[in-house]
Length: 288
Image (cartoon, rainbow, N blue to C red):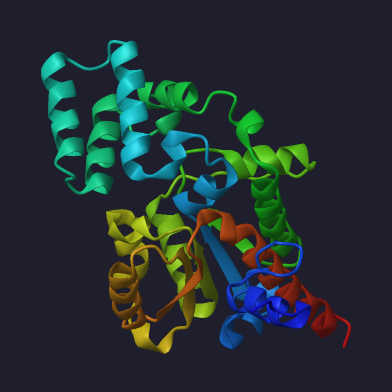
C-alpha cells in the first residue's frame, strides 16, 4: 500500500532525517549552572594537552602524551642526544604503556641533566623541532577556542598552562597580545596554591594531567580542606567507565568533572557558549 506524503515525513523523522535528507542538528550540551554563573575574575583557567589536540588535531605530538614523547624521542635520536640503549629503554616504556607522564619527565631530565633552566638545554631544541611551524597547522575551530580563552582573560580571568607547546602564546601574539611564561619556582607554586584556595579553577583538556606529579603536588596534595573548594574540569567523555572513575575521584578533591562532548571537535562550540555566558555576567556585574 502506498504511503501518503505526511506519513513518509513522519517515518523520516523517526529515523532521524528530515525532508532534505540531512540528519538533525546535534543538541548542544547544557552548561552546568554552578560554572556558568561564575564571573571571569573568579576563574583561573588551566590549559592542558586536550586544548592543543583540539586546536591542531593533525599534529600527532599534540594528541597524547605517547605522541609527544615519541616525537621528542625521534628528535633526540636525530640530534644524536641518546645512546642506543637509552633509546631502546624509552621505546620499551612507550610500548608497555608505563606511566607516560613519568616517562616524559625522565626524558626531559635526560635531555637537560645539568640545569633546571629549560631554555639552556637540548630539550628546548627538541621542542623547537617537534613544534616547528605550528601556527600554520591551527584549524579555524581551534583558533575560535583560543579566542574564547583570550576573551575570558580580557574580562578578568587568569590563565595557566602545563603544555610544552606554545599555541596559546602564538595565537595571542597574532592578536597583538603578549603572554608571559613562568618557571614553577617554590614561590610561584605557593602563589598558585593560594589562588587555588580563593578562586575557582577551570581545567581545560587536563584529563591526563591529573597523573602528573607537579599537578598532584600543586592541587591534590598540598591544599587542605579540598572538599570545601569548587573547581571544574572539562574533559572529553571518551570511555564511559574511565569518565565515571575520573568524576568520582576528582569530586572528593573539590573538582567537578564535566563532559563537553565525545569528540575533541565538540570543545570549541561548547566553550564559546560558556565564555559568552560568563562574560555577559561579568559585564552586567561591572555595570551595576
